[in-house]
Length: 368
Figure 1 (cartoon, rainbow, N blue to C red):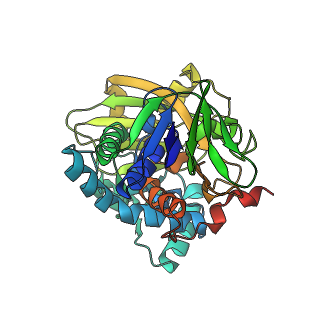
Figure 2: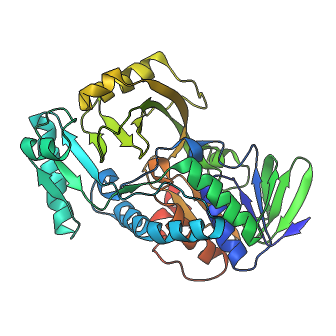
Figure 3: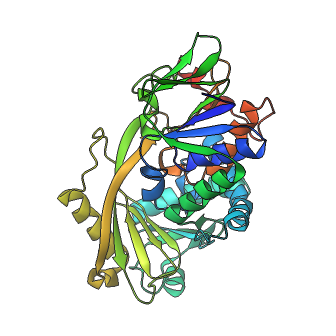
């Protein structure tokens, strides 16, 4: 069997790259060990918040901003191609400091973001109360009006359908190894079968470091377990995505239909996907502290999954020392945010085109 490109991993990243390659006329095969989107892609909260997530100026902020800028057009493309709505809304983000200590950190964040030319609004307690009356009294906060959200399960379904309609093939298979001679990729071996290809893109999320021949040490990308709780409200209690700062902080994502996602734990526990009593307790406590009226909200469900974590919190994107072997993994909490820009960049490199963003900070060469 031979293809122009093989994508290892059928999450949002793999599907988006397959879409871009198929649109260029390549024969693309996506290999996924279960069903597309079965792992982190469908369990993510779908927050598109580079300003809130960034720890400071730098390449991750710039990549995130590029991802956010591309997202509206990406959504329009997918919805036109599939007729499916993906739950994209520019809801804005409120970062809340419930005490004075956390407020100082938000002030510093506002300063460097304003210097970068980003839109950020400082809010006092009364302004927060007017904007979101259900939110607990806070010492202060920041509003990022350009941040947004999307519903990952809907996005995943639209992406896999769009890729298939563009000509990408999907197969269920366990990839044993990437085949290469140290200089050029030859394909992959899976389930006793060899699939020849001049291009192999490893987009296997938390499992990427376990793919033999991918040029990633086993610990380069590790699974960070994240637990989520879903609450049900009618009507919705608040409009903005809320980030509560502090050691016991987290986020609350309001969906248009009244659901609220509360997350997320960050646990380096290997590939253990259990939802735990401690995890649920911490998330429910967070929900009540942030929006006290959520204490009476029914619990609609809970889940856990893995986010691909790297030690420096930067993804691995683009070419490797082996010609034709590319990486698109390690996006940690920002895989949904970065899906469009990552797919555009990796597909461009795979086809010998200049990428739309600088990929040097995300090269696997930084591990040396």
